[in-house]
Image 1 (cartoon, rainbow, N blue to C red):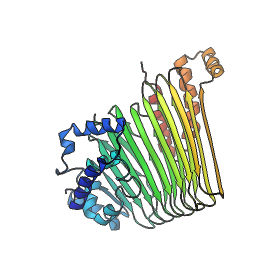
Image 2: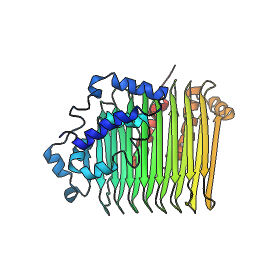
Image 3: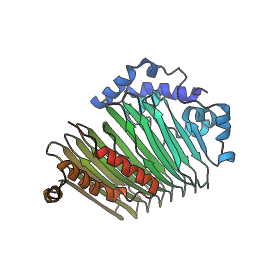
Image 4: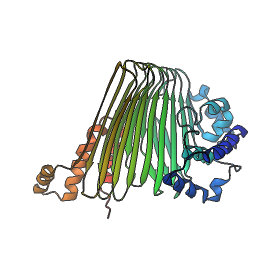
Length: 384
């Protein structure tokens, strides 16, 4: 089951469009690495994960209540939904050179469709070991539907990876979304973007524990009135890693609520940047936009930056931000070392104490315990 003609044409248009964007050194490096691999540059080939007829039949709503298909198979089975929504409403293929080439060189992904009013009781697992660098998930949640999405992707390609996830929520929909990823390439890009209709609720719970360079783009567009989005994140940067975390919630509709809470730790010679934006557009009266960014540094050679931004175009709103960057408390470190802990073990204990208050707000107990285990493994990694 190959990609249909409309998708191939759209991908070919993306190649032409990307040439019109002003390039950046980081984007040039990623795209050059993709184009060095001949198998990635051939758009005419059969691409992506495939599904046989039995898998497609088993995925239709009347048998399971919701759809879970490989992306390219879904493009044939649900062409109207894919044409209207794939990289159109959340991650736009026309926004940047990198987005255009991500679409053009798309290798695979998943399509999740939850029809109106459907309540999915068990978490939907998006766990994939992806050997190719451009992977994309499209999740459509209908009006009044509810679901928990758990995404854990492992990019095994040595090419720079771009993981894209789009979350499209209908009127009154509710989604709890969890994510943690692992990359193999030195440099990677990750985008999770949501479009929300009125009275929809989205809770994002993010754990960035990978040890490679990473640029992220987490974004929620509260388009309809009464919508709410909350992004809670914990992250660690170590070694010579560079993490550039960009988080934004757009309050477009009236009486919308957007909250960003992120705690991060930088150690060794790593760089960790938090760029958080809360934007309230004209007409979004009664909106509430809040953000909190905190970074703790564990060495003199690491760097951290917290850049909170509030853009407010309406008068009747409630908005605020808090940001802090600070070294580990010397007194706390001395106290723990005086009780027999090594400097490393003391830093591990203090890091856990700094990140767990946010991590403990993740509501699913099993998932929270798994992330605490991942955190413990990450803290034990040694770097020069």
